[in-house]
Amino acid sequence: MRTRLVNISHLLTGNLVGSVVGMLGFLVTARALGATDYGVLALTYSYTRAVGLIVGFQSWQPLIKYGAELSGEEHLEDYRSLLKFGLVVDISAALLSYLVAIGFALLFGPLVGIGGNTIEQVIIYSTVLLFQINGLPTAVFRLAGRFRLLAYGSVVGGIARLVLCAAGLLAGMGLLYFVIVWTLTQVLGSVVVLGMALVEIRRQGMRRFISAPLKGVTERFKGLLSFTIGSNVELTVRSSASEFDTLLVGAFTDPAGAGLYHIAKRLGRLVVQIGVQVQAVLYPDVARLWAQGDLAMFRRTVLQTEIMLAVFGLAMVVGTVLGIQPVLDWTVGKAFAGAGPLAMVQMMAVAIIMSGSALRTALFAMGRQLAVLKVVLVSTLMFHATALTMIPLIGAMGANIANVVMGIVGLIGLLRVYHSAFSAES
Image (cartoon, rainbow, N blue to C red; front, side):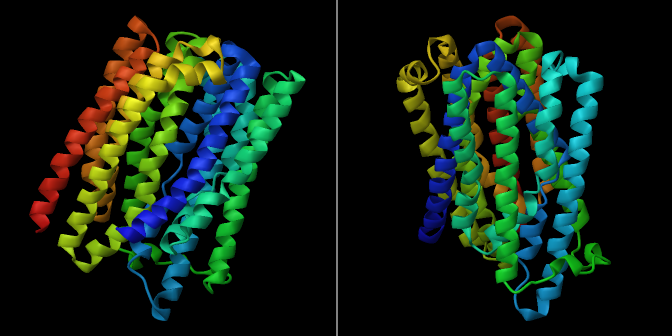
């Protein structure tokens, strides 16, 4: 646990810096554009991110699961083929995401709140999807224990974005300027992380892994293809709630309402990063423990992590209730005061969802991705049912309530599946 906490601290430090810098970029942009234009940018960002997550693959999950079982020179060629498989999946998904984002926006954009001027911004910002090759770098850094590189590599683009956004605020620039800045800096961050991953692969002695044969890779790694597809389906279903919520608010209200909701959501994302980074450190460890059959240590590791996440989530809820309104007044200004109550409820949802992070990771390590998918499917259906009912009645707050409902249903489902699966394996 001490080693994990050190690795988590590296990830949290780097990602906290990255998240804070990113949040400052959003706040500067919001102050420069006002609620309506910021709402247009928020819809553009949410739509593009949603398409990237729904169409893209979580290739790092199968790479870590099967890569954790390989060690020694005798498995070097298998590892090279596995990495190439992940890179091919990433590149294919990036190209498909770009085409889907533009095509869907042109044909059906108004159905998800993307219409008029927003479509022009989407066409520009969708360029980031072509460079969204994140699965391979994530797997390489996590398997090698190079959490420091993973943590600090993505900060470069965020710092460049903050500087350029601040310059735009001072110069009185409009919406188009900020969309271009967000596009270029996002691409910069992705390129830097991919370059660092290729250097790390070379450092490990796996030169020219691009030339590794792919023939028979799915036979050598039994279940690789089904695991890859399953993780994508699970992410697609989950992302339909976590990414389409802003679009739903925009579709049922207006860009200004979407902007207020997005500010509250971005504050919640700062805390979500805690759960994400804990998963990043935990997954390789529990995958190895499960492969070794050390069930006692496996269970203790998961329990310790769950307790830590629950305590932290509760502390963040209390902190948000006490301090959100002064923070909003000091940063984005009085125009976004309505985001305060939204942020309080959003933080409750985030704390509940984050509490299940270790359980989801453990079930993936146990090969129970189908069970996780079922839980995610049920909780997501509850989200959409609640959101579609509540948003037309009470506006953006309906999306926050839907997130709370989804979090409760998901946590209960993961707990039941985990205890059932562990008892069966024991």
